[in-house]
Amino acid sequence: MVNKTEIRKQIKAKKKELSRQQVVDYSTQIAKRMIESDFYNEADVIYPYIAYNQEVITDLIIEDAWKKGKKVAVPTVVGDVMDFFYITNFDGLKKSDMGIPEPVPSDETLAKGSPKVLIIMPGLAFDRNFNRIGYGGGYYDKYLDSHKETEFLKVALTYDFQILPHLETEEHDYKVDAIVTQSEIIR
Image 1 (tube, rainbow, N blue to C red):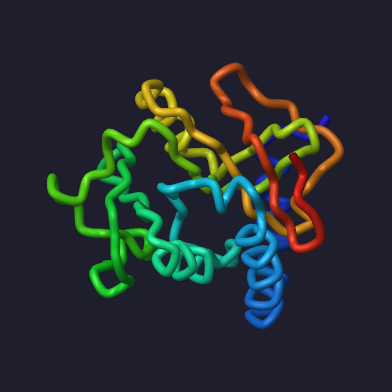
Image 2 (cartoon, helix red, strand yellow; image 1 turned 90 degrees about the vertical axis):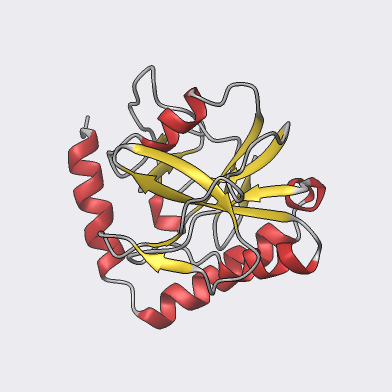
């Protein structure tokens, strides 16, 4: 059985092989599939990530959410704590120390109090049992753990090659509820 570290290494290498045009094309296909899904259309609040390093680009989903009047909050990491902050455009995003576009944290824009949220979780590998291997920081697992009062629908946007036959995960690893790729929705 291949361990998480090796899986991360292999998938990162495959993602690096993607051309910018492939990332854009696949992301557009994934976004269209997501935007047409019932679970997206039923959501009033979404917590997407801002794409970084060959991740599926979420801009089309975010723009569609704004057009449809959905509230959109994206993550910021301070130290080892991740929180989500509402945004109404991309103008206020600043690059973090890691180069990831993030909103500037403020009490006024802190996302809280929503009973139901569609959260889009990034990751490196997934399987058809909805297991997820993230980047190794545990930010999303810790965030979900500390917000048990919110009902999250956890969705992964991923490229087809990131779906593996079986993943070994640990007790603290959260599963996703749906996976959207350029060719299918796994639910």
